[in-house]
Amino acid sequence: MYYGNIKKFDIADGEGVRVSLFVSGCRVCCPGCFQKETWNFCFGKPFTKETEEEILKALEPEFISGLTVLGGEPFEPENQAVLAPFLQRVKQAFPQKNIWCYTGYIYDKDILPADGKRHTEHTQAMLDCINVLVDGPFVLEKKDISLNFRGSSNQRILRLK
Image (tube, rainbow, N blue to C red; front, side, top):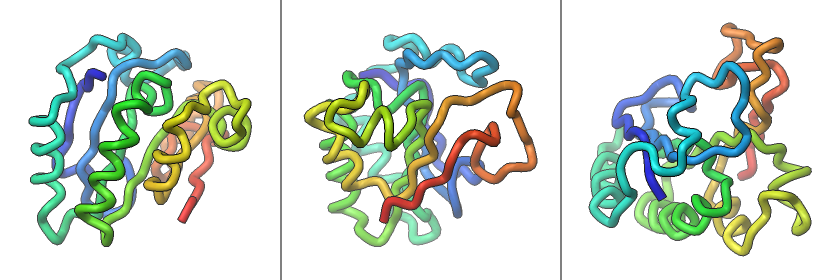
């Protein structure tokens, strides 16, 4: 897996001050996407054990509320295989912090059901770690800059835990 960016003090992608990981690779390809470069699965840098350590270190301060994973698309199968064990590691190291995840897929249609188009053997492990999932594709015609933590009105903020 590759990633495009790590923000160590992000206040736009979830509640509180967060560390945000922007993964690479997306097949949703929403018109009007603000991160088109992350559609490419090889954009940015390889996600390594050193990258994991960097993120874990950034999560240490007490004022950091948690981790946000977005993209690109975290629920692409290739990304799930890497993110599931990493999110488990984050949850184990910081049980008091929360994990937000953004996806262009629909939770109860594409991700949760065993026959969903983005459900893999790693999906449940990811979902078990995620506290808040923002789902749904960005729809340019429904863009609304007044919404908290969403780009368009069709997107939902789902509290999984």
